[in-house]
Length: 415
Ligand SMILES: *Cc1c(COP(=O)(O)O)cnc(C)c1O
Image (cartoon, rainbow, N blue to C red; front, side, top):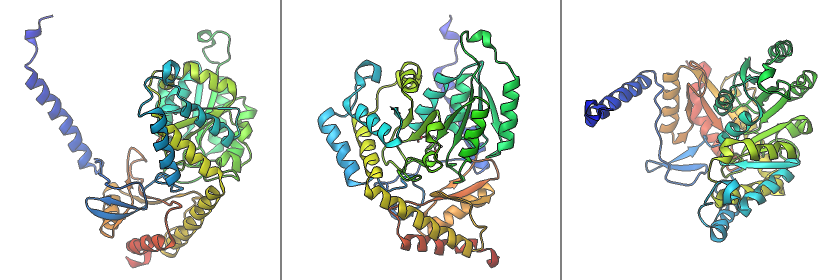
């Protein structure tokens, strides 16, 4: 190859940057450009942004555990005993005791035979789905499914079918179609084509629940498998706070229970809970698990401490506070003339619609020292932009009063 024929390096670089800058400009023109905001304080109800203290309604730290003394202590202790890094992937020499202790604790907490932790919920999805399904199989997901699941299904090569949000008739139609459609069995000698249904239990941007009981009935009738992503439900639903599957008493009928350790648990990481064969298969086939350095010991230790708090009387009490405050907020919104939010979770979306208007609403709240994110495409559909308010156990009733006062501009009879 004649290297001298290439354009000089500086020209390539400038072309590269021009092209990317143009793309960024198009995002900005559509009010879709995003930027990082530096926070100079721990994750708490008051966060320091640009030298100002803002009342934070954006965190998924639902139980207020991210900055809990016991969670911090566990992380510090793990660093003292196991160091800063894990050194290798889990299957090489990185399978340190804190990771095993976390997984034992997770299985007890969720009431499953076994559990496996991943460096993030995203990695859990990306490793698990392609380990279970491939080309001849069908994966059926809810329209509002999180990006991690969509990406994982694409990576698996399975046929993807999407049903309208929480629409059981649409789901059943797809299952009937899959029953009639033989998979390319030749590609997987020795097994039938698989059908995998995946849903969230609490939807991350709408805060509503999936009709899990009906979905379980449907999947049994059609011989499909079910994976439930409890990212926004772990720690908050059910008498042991295991999630919505527990609250609906269907845990033992869900093949694959997924969640994250970075939301209510207060640390970071993802998990899969289920049967021993499921976990053993993932150890052998989940590529995001196999080909990635194990999380730092502090991460697993912090997650274990978070789960222990969730299981304790303190966890029960913190969970009760979240529901009390969510009720206060919902009643406040109804008093403002907003339609009664359907949500039964710690996520209360205020759908504004237009991207630009939503950005203005978020800026208006920030002027009142309140931080609520403007959630836009591609996190939600275009024209469905919203303020996403999240309530945590660390908030107070006075905090709810403060955001309600700042939301007065939304009062429907004032315009
Ligand atoms: C946050 C989230 C994930 C990803 O979990 P991380 O631990 O943040 O990577 C997966 N699914 C849903 C529904 C989520 O909200």
